[in-house]
Every structure is written in C-alpha cells, then in structure tokens.
Length: 258
Image: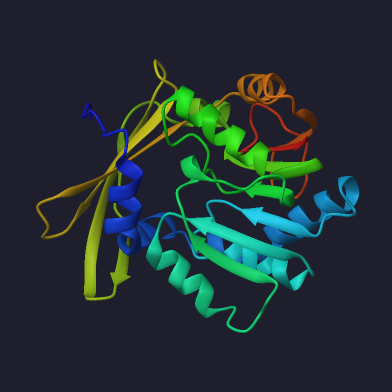
C-alpha cells in the first residue's frame, strides 16, 4: 500500500467517519475492559510525582473513556477531540457535572495557556502528522501546562512493532454499526524508511476507503524531542502495570515535567 495520505487526513477520518473508525479501533474488547487499570495507572503516576495535580487536559479524548475514569478520582477534567460524535457521547455522560467539560477541537490548534496541572495524551495519539507538525502539537501540550506540570504520553512501542510486523497484512474484524452489521476490512503495515504505520479501512459495500497514518517514535527520539522543548523526563514504562520499559514492551509510556 503506497497511497499518499493527505496531511489533513484526521479531519476526514475522525470527523466524517468517526463512528466507523471508532468501531474499527475498539474492536478488541480488551481496550474497554482495561480502562479501569489504565485510569488507576495514570492516577498512581500523578500521586507519586505530582500530588497537587487537580486540573487535567485529556487530548485527544475520544469518547472520554479515560477522562471519565479520572473524573471519578476527583480530578477536574477537560477533554478535547476533533470528532463531534465522540464529544457528544462524552458530554452525555457528564451532564450537570461542573468538574468536566468536553470540547470539539484540533490538537494542532490548542490555545490553552498554563491552565492545567497535567496533560494526558493516551493510547497512541501522538504522531498523526509530519515531524514538524508533531513537534508543534507537543509544544501546544506544553503551553497548556502550569509550572511543574505533568505530561504523560502513552504510545505503541516502535521497537515492539518492528519486531512483530514483517510487512503488510490484513485484519478483518466484524463489527456492528448503527445501520446494521457490515464488515470492515483493514490493511496496514509499518514502513521502516519513514517510521510510520499506514492503514486503509474498506467498508463492505462502500466505494470510498478510509485512511490512517501514524509516526512511531523510538524512546530516544521522543525523549530528545521533550528535552529540546525544555521538558524533564522522569520515567518510562512499558505497560499499564508499571513494568519497566524495554525493547520488547508493548507500550512506551513517558512521564515528563515542565
């Protein structure tokens, strides 16, 4: 698959096809089953390193699964996502709760200025764009942080992917969509020349395909990028249980301080 994907692909994929992409990405049931564990892990990181943290920005927040969990821990949470559908779903869960708000927004255009004690970027949601734009997104996160604020980033471990993906292969989960049962056919693979995973999703019976791309960072790359932008890296973990990061870890979770 060598299709050139538009630089602005996130708007088409997550806004126009948000519900379909959501079904595709969350097809493995473990994603939601593990949410309490993930929330507890984030909470423990904040308690251990940033005990005074109260205001959290979750970006992109999706349908709010992490934000809602953090809300139960007593934090005031703001979630931002480009998908109106995801934000509508998240807001429906917090009616009347003045400690939570969910806003439609593009992470490239965040305008927060030192308003949060922590920014959480969770579940492989950094690296959607080219390297220059990704760094600008990171700077938006940092600008949103108050002095000594926390930045917690959870990504798929690039080295783990390199070991597992020898080329392109197909994945065909069957999911239930709002208008009945249809199949989504996904084809994706990792390009070692660009450090990007590229994917296309084909909807059964539809002419148009949905595209997705993600830049995967090595630990040294992301640490270097954070330090370049005056962040201090505190720890790196390899899973949601707090296991030490290694080349064989499925996740790359970094905790940094402004």
